[in-house]
Image (cartoon, rainbow over all chains, first blue to last red):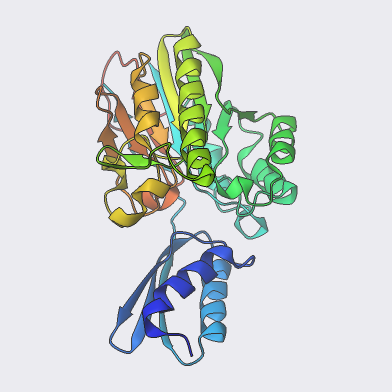
Length: 82
Length: 247
């Protein structure tokens, strides 16, 4: 079993280095007996794949997947740079 | 007046094609050019580059990009650059372009940049060959970005990078990873020229606004930071209008 102290690091590296994920912007937090994944990705498919990979690699860990999809609407304001 | 739309870290692959397009179709009514601050793709494959070109190409305004670290993942950055260039997208790497907009010359100097850290907590060009290579890469890219910026003759000069030139726009990221998110040498390069605005991405959990030590406004336009398809910045203003009416 994964040593608890390495768990966040192992999940973080899995999410970055696994070809089907390649996400560097996911935060991994341990909360009591849970691991909470948070951040934003570009599609629901990517969010689902993250949860699937983490759950299958760490079946003994309770995972909460709190990952959103970044909005992509047009802006309504302009910022003047001076 | 010039209006620039900007975003970074869009990480396009097949599953993203079509997400940005409705907002991009409105872009020519809101801005004169689109600048994209790297991480155009997930793994830097030519196929993903084609998806990016499908999504972000063919607009009625010029599109200028730099590559990010994701665009280097499969070591095919040259092929990625060719795919984008063939689609009419300008790819900068320690190089420049000048766009003629409403009688003004918008100069853009771009580079991916690299890590290294910031004042008080930066890596040094010392010790093992691997460390010297790391910091040497940082120094080389920053020096060439500075040369590019100083070479441009224009009315408004914009620096476009993927890595951050200042730590202020990293606030929200863990302090421990700042050296992997940017370097102070990029900020020095930006300050070596009359830069009006510096745009970068890479720091998904960072903050939007900062300034270089020399006072140049810096904006982190990573998509998860701006939380919309693109931001719009106005340069060379004759009047200020915060409402985004057609330009």
